[in-house]
Length: 447
Image (cartoon, rainbow, N blue to C red; front, side, top):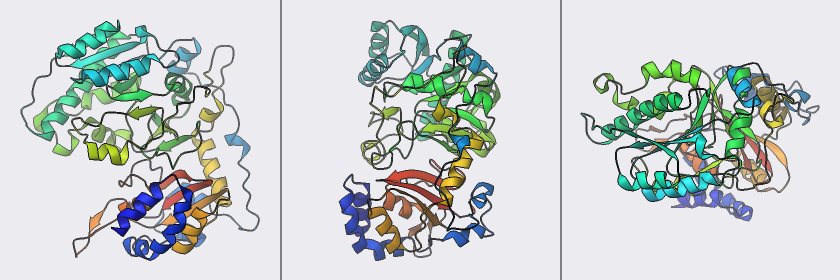
C-alpha cells in the first residue's frame, strides 16, 4: 500500500507532496536495496563499459562548469542526401494512417490531423485492414485516399494471431504507401487512435534531414514513452533512445529496403512467438544494430485509444492518460531550404557529437546524491540544477527466491517512469525533468 502511495505521490504535479516522501525513504530503500546509489567514484566501476559516461568523469569537482559547449549550440548545415534535398525543395513528407474497425476513433484522429499546420489531403493515405463500412465512410467523407487490405485470418489463434495480422497489415501498407507516394524518401506512419500537436508535421520536416547527416540515427519518432506531465519541460528538447517508441514515426524508403525482406510473420510457421509483434522485432539488436531513434522530450502525439488489440483501460490510465503532448501553436521549427540550408538549432544539437558533448558537460557540474535522504531532499528543493543519480539495477525485473520481483520497476515507481527499464534509455541513461531539476538517471548494470 505504501509503495503504491509513493508512486502516486511522485507522479503528482504537486511538488510539495515530495516532502512527505521523507516518511517513505526507508520503505523505498528496502524496495531497491539492489539499486545502490553511487557517487562520482562509480564512474570508474570496471563493470561500467559505456564509453560516453566514462568520458564524463571530471578531473576535479571544484572547477566543474555548467556551461554547455558551443558545439551543441550551433546551427549545422543540412547534409547532402535524398531527405535533405526533398525537404529543401519544399516537398512535404506524406502520412500513412493504418486503421481497422474503430470508425469513431478514426474520425477523431483525422479531424485532429486536419488541424495540424501544413496538412493536405493529398499527402495522406489511409490503409484499412478489412472492409468495415463505417471506417470506409469516415475516410471517404473527408476526400482522403483509401486502400483496403484483405485481412485473412492467420493459422494461429489468440494474441499471436492478432500480432501476425497487424504485422502483415503494416508490411502491406508500407509497400503500398511507397508506391502511392512514389517520389518520397520517407513516410510518417500513424495509427487511428492519436491526437496531434499543431507542429506535428513541421517537427518531422525539420528533424528528418538529420538522418542524412548522422548514421547513428535510423528513425525519427513523435512519441516519448516517459513524456509524463511531471517529467517534461523543454518543448523543443530532443532526445535519443535505442528503444523504438513508435506511435508516430518516420520510415525511410532506404530503410524499408533494408527491413522489408525480413519483416516478421511473412511465414508465420518460421517465426518465434516473441517476434510476432512488428514493434518488438524493430527493437531487437539485429534490426537497430546500435542505431538510435530521435524523439521529442515533449511528445507530438497523444494516444487517445483506451481499448485496442494490445490496449486496456487500466494500461491506458497508467501509461498514456498523463502523457503531456505539445498543444502550443506558437512553437515552430526551422526546416532547411535551398536559400537557407540550415538545420533547426534543436535538431543540430541532436547530432551525435553535439548530443554527447552536451551530456558530458552537464554531468561535470551535476549534483550527485549519495543516499536516499540526500536524493529526496534534492528533488524537493526548488533550486534549479542538474542532478546525476547513479544506480546499479537490472533493467528487467527478476524474481528472488522468495518470489518477490526486484529490478528497475521499483525505481520507476519512485519517479513515475515506465516500469520497463529499456524504454527511453540511451546507453544506460534516462534523462528527464523533476520540477527545476534536470535529472540524469544513470544505470551501471551490465545489461
